[in-house]
Length: 249
Image (cartoon, rainbow, N blue to C red; front, side):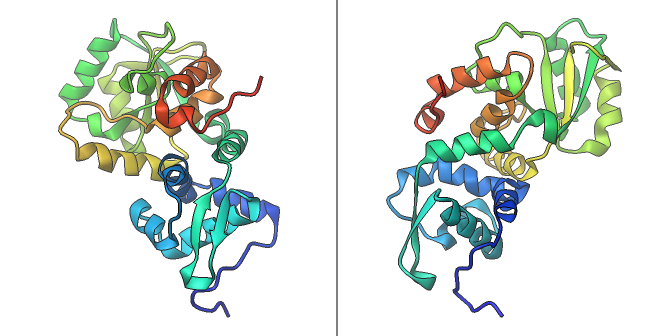
């Protein structure tokens, strides 16, 4: 039986990789890369509270990260404190384990609307704007860090997939095999998106939600249409990404 306060390690690398890069683990990895890198030491409970993760899930992820060398542990049992070790490698390994093309169901469409402005106006009038989150190039633009000529396309995550058919009607969408005007994507990293939505709701800005900067970068990295170009641009120009990303020449 597991003793209270113990810190056990997984037995196999397969289990470790699955735990670290799974949906519920993503908010902890995101915290490590964007917040943990600024701290000399932090506790398990601190990260659990700030990410909304259960102590059990956080402990499993911490254990896996220590095993893989992404975290350094100081102290024993419940007095353990941690620091991030080599965030560049952690991000690089995350890139290697996640691809939006492999992990997400993506539907491509043409639209009867003539431009992006009309699409967004129709979406806002419909009252369905909270059922979607801007993704990929559209999210990069929302972060004011877009560097491609893809100006009229819109990419959305569906946070309420049951409303997909209603969105298709409102946005006058028709399936399209090559190219797209609009993408509707079913998310893999729901936890990161929901946490970001909660944070954006607390701000005074009014408009469409967008994916957080780290997920935007990860999604773009393996996206076939000018994704790596845009991801690299973000990593070079966004302070939070620049300090944790090293491009392989």
